[in-house]
Image (cartoon, rainbow, N blue to C red; front, side):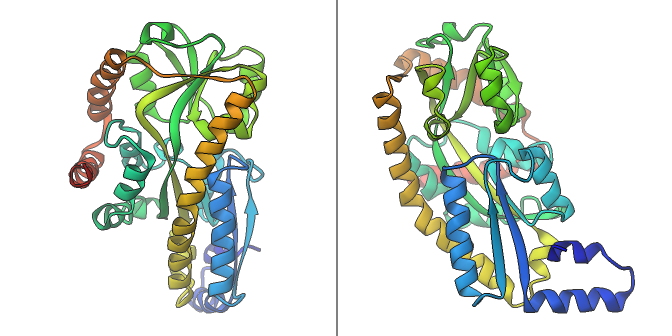
Length: 330
C-alpha cells in the first residue's frame, strides 16, 4: 500500500502516530505526468535520482509519464486526496482544483524562457507559490517554464482572423478558454492523452500546447502548421500531497532539496529541448508562423484584460506579486 494511503487507514490515534513514524523511516512515492519525453518526465527522473540519493534509499520513487496513472485531472485529484503522491502538469490543468494557479495562464509578464524562469525562482514568487494549494491538500514543489506556447492547426494561422471558428484544444484552463473565445476561436478543454486521436480524426481543428509537445508526440505527421502565441509560455507545476510530505519527518527537507536540485538541472535541459524541438519540427517539414507586430499587440490587448477579469481575488493578489517581481527583471 502506498505510504500516503496509511494516513487514511485507521481511526485510532495510536495507529496514526505509528503510521507517521513508519513513514519517517521509509517511503515510496508515485510520480506522474500526462506527457512523456518532455520536461515533466525529465524533471521527475532528476527528482527521483536526487531524492533517492539524498535519502540514502529511505525514499523510493517510481516514475509514470504518459498518463500511465490516468488523465491530468484524475491524477491531480489523486494528489489532493492522497492516492497519488506527486503529479506534474501544465498549470492550466490545476485551475479546477485550485483557481489560484490561473495566474500562470495570464500572458505578457515576460518575453523569454530565461526571464520566466528567473521570475518563477525569485524569492517572492517562490514564497507565494508555497502557499498555493495548501488548503486543497497539496504543496507546490516546482514551477518551471516548459516552452513557448503555440498552436498546431490543420490550416495555417498567420493572422488573428485565421482563428475564427477554429476548434482549439486547451489544457483545461478557463482563462485560456476565455482568451481564445475573445480572439474568435472555439476552445475545448481536453487532457493531453485525448488530444492526438481527436486531432487525427478532425474532432478538433488545432491544439494549444508547448512547442516541445508537438515534436515529442510527432504532430508533424498530421499537420505542418505551427503558430507561436505572443509572449505566452507553458508553466509546469509539480505538486505533492501535503499529508505525505509532512509525514516524512526529517526526510521532508530531503524532498524539498531534491526538488530544488531538479529545477537547477532541469532548466538548461529545457532550453536545449526547445531548440532541438524547433529543429526537429522543421526537419520534418513543419513551418513556424509568428503574428505581425500589430496582431501580436492586439492579441495581448484582448487576452490580458480578459485573463485578469477572470482571476479570483486571491489569484489577483498572487498575480500582483508576479507582476512586481517581473518588473524587476525588465
